[in-house]
Each structure stands twice: as C-alpha cells, then as structure tokens.
Image (cartoon, rainbow, N blue to C red):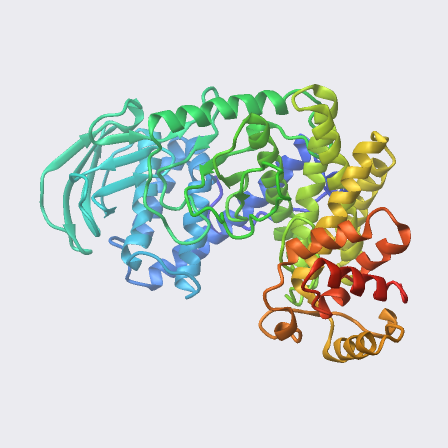
Length: 556
C-alpha cells in the first residue's frame, strides 16, 4: 500500500472519459474512477495526519496510530487497503479535515480525532496483530469502522468518554469509560469482533446477504453532515431492506451493464437507511408528484455510498441506486476536472425540483437523470415494471433531462471537459428522443413536463415592477397587453416585487386552473410560456382567471 504522501498521479484515457460522458461507463471506466478516489483518499489522509500532529487533540499520537496501521498493512495489505478505502473511513477523514479547517462541527474535537485509534484497532484485528491504545466512546459505545459496535456501558449512558483498548489474539478488551479525554477506570468488556455473532456487548455491522455491500446503521460517519449516533435497525426492518436489495439486484442484473442507467451492483459499497425527517436529505428533492421514488442523497467523500429512505419495493430501490451511483461517478470526475465555472447563482430551472438551482446542481441532476432515463428504458423491455409506467417515465425523463443539458450548454459556463461531457449526454438523450413511444404515453409525458414547468415558473418567477405596472394599467384600460419580449422575468422570494398582489395565491392550484384554461388549443397554450404574467394580474376567481387569460391572448 502506498504511503499517505503518495500522490499517484493519473492520466485518464479519452475513451474512458467519453464512456462516462455518455452517462454510462464500463467496468474499466469505473475501476479508473476508483483509482482516482484511492489517490485522493491517500492524499487527504496524509494531510490529516500532518494536521493532527500539529494539534494536541488526539487521545494519543497520530504518528503512533499510523505506524500501527502501516505495520498491519505490511502483514495484510489488502485488508488495510479495503479499510482505508471504505466509505466509513473516507467520510471520517473528510469530516476531520473540515473540522480542522473550521468548516464543520461535531462532538468534542478530541473524540472526533480519536476515532483514528478505532481505525487502528480494525487494521490490527484484520492483520492478526496486537495493540494497546486509548479510544473514544460515544454514549458508552465504541464503533469499529466496517466491523460493528462495542457497547461498554449500559444503555442510557450519554456523553463522550475514553476507554483503554487491549487487543490480543483477536480478543478485544475495553477498560474504563469515564467522561472526558482522560477517562476513568471501570468494568471490562471483552468481545471478539471477527467472530461475527452478536452478543450483549457486540453488534456486528450488517452487509447485504451474499455481498460485501454494507447496510450501515452503526457508523457515526455514515451521514451527510455531522456525525450521528448509531441507530441499529430493528430486525424486521433489516429483513425488509435485505429483501428489497435482493429484488433490486435481480432487476439490475438483467440487461448488459455498460449503457447509461445500468449498474453493476457490486460497485455499490454502502447503503445507509435514511432516518431523518420526511423532507429528506439536502439535495434529495428529485421527484415529480406520484413518482414513488424514495428520497436519496450521495456524498462525494465516499465513492459508491448512498443514503436512501425506505423504498416501497425493489424497483424503487434499484432506481435510487442507479441515480445515486451516477452522482458518485460525476463526483469522481469532478475530483479530476473542473467541469463548470459556476458563480453559484440559483437561477436555473430543474424539472425534478420545486426551487431554482445553481449550474453545479443542474449538472448533477442532468447526469443523474440521464442514468434514470436509461434505467426506465431498460424496464420497458425486461418486465420488472408496468410497461406503460416504464414508458411514461422514460418519455418524461428524456424530455426533462435534454432540456437541462441544453440549459447548461447555452446558459452556463462549461469548461472544455465540461463541454465534452455535456455533448456526450446530449448525444445519448437525442438518440433516445428518436426512439418510438406509444403516442398516448408520449402525450402524457409532454403534459407532465409542461405542468411541472408552469408550476415552477408560478412558484419562482415574477414580472418585474415595470412589466407588472404596464400589465395592470393596460388590463384596467382594456388596451392591448404590452409585448412579453420587452421584459424579462425576475426571481421571486423574499424580495418578490409582486408579493403584495400575489400573496395567498397557491401556485399549484393556479397552475392546474391555467392548464385547464389553456386546454388543447394551440393559441391558448401560448399563455403557458410566461404564466407569471397571468399571476401579475392576481386573478382570484375562475371567472377573473378566464378574463385575464382571454386578455393576455390578445398579445400571445
């Protein structure tokens, strides 16, 4: 295994980039991304060890911990490699660096930093070596990353403490459990983590049956932000996840595994059950109403890891896995190449969200939903989903995602590699747009895409003060509406220039009424290009809505 200072410079072959730019990626392309993440991980680890040596916050010497890990790597290099490249350790490393840079928070810093010695214990266990170290406890328990949870004190013990860990011949003895960095003596707990069987003091980490993919409900660094307490799943819930994962794996194994939307299940390293509030993780609002998709999110700190709310069935889990693995691939590419010059302005329309997005978020969505589109394309043929539902999802997502790619090419500032990536996605989606779908299904998909866009505009865009004044004056006078080409809409929100007039108007309800008024008439559908002009007139009743719509059509 390389030392933490090895930068392992890599040059990506162009054909692998183009495979990934299409939205897919062969096993060779994904393996290259894993090498990229390995190089990045070791560089970050080297920086972390340097910084920990500069900060007296660890319960022991960071240099000593690394020496013990390095000795284990000499005995069993593949085990040490797997540990250091695991999602559990990756998330801890990046969290610690953010803490030391002052951009993250968490438990007492000594407890966060002391997790290094839990990593050390696992490396020594895997190598069959002994160790004597001091480790931090959270709520009376020690998490051994990738292995499980040792409960030292009775349930209910809160706060942070330390314990002395003595490892001999695969037997781990923990003594102490007093509060603070110094600890205090107490009763001993003895476990054998590699034996696997649960005991009163030992809760082993779960993997999905027959795989090395973790169902992680224990590791404190399994979330997206600050560390979280272990929350073991009840046996019935764990069994439910196991069943759904088996169904998802069966679904994903059916087609070949190179095209966009296809996933080799073994490339998913970890699934973390989302146990937060119903709103879901940050960035997870990616559904149209009634889609049935679980909420999900990914961190670029842990390739192949994902947080997923409990899905309804194996099909929903398979879709979420495809979606989130797309984020992992793009995250690894972003560690290699700047793809966009993003000013961070949240002004763009994203068809899977209700709020405006910045260009970087739009790129994440475009890449993820190219995969989702391909996923539903495959479902049309393999019989794992209702064929009409699969065709609808395919038709809807190809329309929406191609629109976003066009936005990124025309309104964002992609770099050279970013332009190459976007053209790759566009080629994939353009080919799919030429594939036939039943006319009725295609019409429903177009209607759903239009409905989302109209509601989004009503929710987020307003006529500027000058346009609103001109519209109101002309409407009251009964003259022709001012031309829409003379004005540009502005984002609404706290500074909404139409707040007084539009307060209390429900965008969803108004969208439904406006779509009903527009109907199938091509002339009336022109209203839907700038529905915020209708909102500026604040129609309060169906009759006022019809009058305002008829008047706006004089110009549309």
